[in-house]
Amino acid sequence: MAEGKIIQGPIIHCVDPYSLTVIQNGFVIVDDEGKATNNTRSTARFQIAAVGDAADLHTAKKKFNFAREDLITLGKTQLLLPGLIDTHIHAPQYPNAGLGYDKPLLEWLDNYTYKLEKQYRDQELCKRVFDAVVRKTLDHGTTTACYFGSLFRDSTLVLASSVTRYGQRAFVGKINMTKLAPEDYIETAEKSIEDTLEFVKEVKDIGNPLIQPIITPRFALSVDMELMKKLGAIAKEQNLHIQTHISENKDEVKMVRELYDNKSYADVYNEANLLTPKTVLAHGIYLSEDEMNLLSKTGTSISHCPESNVNLGSGICDVRKLKNHGITLGLGTDVAGGASPSIITAMRSAISASTNLSFADENSKPLTYIDVFYLATLGGAKALALDDQIGNFQVGKSFDAIIVDLDVKSSVAPEVGVCGR
Ligand code: GUN
Ligand code: FE
Image 1 (spheres, rainbow, N blue to C red):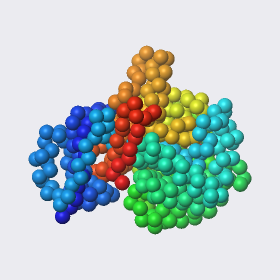
Image 2: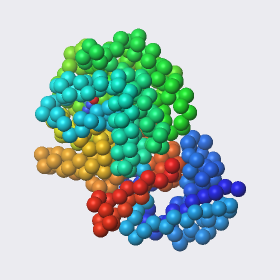
Image 3: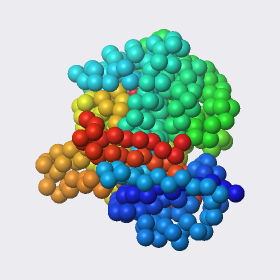
Image 4: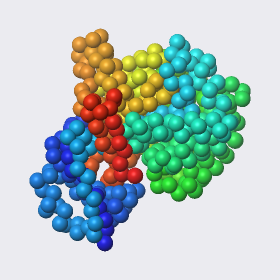
């Protein structure tokens, strides 16, 4: 007979996009063996069997007839929230977090980022940094992260091991990059494909249902159309997710137009079949109407990375405009463009960025705390096409949650505990 857990206390989550559901005294019943409902896509050992108001707990419990059940009652200062989702983070860049914000994107890449990333031939460095990134993001409540690794297959595999070791849910991508970077930090197109195929296989062979490989061309300036098309074909054949950057910086956008016969950034990716419902693009600050409509039509998501956009002087992304075009959005830290590995900081930055935008444009309305809570949870899950598994406490989904303790007397910062692993 199945065993279960009951968590009782205040619950906050988004049942619907951009709206908040608060259950002052609620419960979640978790089936430890994942058999309570027949959600076949759930990777959960821990599956949500029921959710409701504590007044109905007794009746709800009877349905399951667990052989044994643990009751976890939250303390007066504790809240149960869905695990936070970082839809865009560069694990190898973590040592540079907070450094080098005196240069805009393209110079920042040349002066700081590639110089750091190319050091990840060193396996010891990989292990040390990747373990630290995974532990740090989990400490900040990130139960799911979409990672850029490095150019190197074996190094990015170390990241997959770190993620497995600490039980985070993640997408992990080996970067594809054949040009516009130092000679000792690029690859040939043949090697790029060979290593990508091998990497995808190796990640699948780990056999961890929480990790998936993701196709990761760095951005349109790092690869050419032929390679992007091959990567698009691999993603299609193997039904893989795709991540890259789009329209982050004005000089970058101009260079893309120059390099690709005056095509728009989104058209370039579309020609390569890289825009899919399983694609997440970081930034999207300078997208045209046509580009926004194309992303919406193809079901492509945007990872909004507000802290990075300010640090690199990239610009302010008009999140409401993207939302109004029907684009799915999540939040990203974009470490090390972003200095903080915390999605809670990204939530604050998203509010500040949109507030600043509203000073310059009286028609623009700042994002609310509800909007950013949505982006950090259910929005992120939708952006990563994982919303049938995580993002809120809907019956049949994985129990992927954090407990936030607001007791400022007993800790310096709100404590975050990760559960459901
Ligand atoms: N565009 C291409 N590579 C990068 C990167 O590493 N960080 C950011 N923020 N933008 C990029
Ligand atoms: Fe990035």
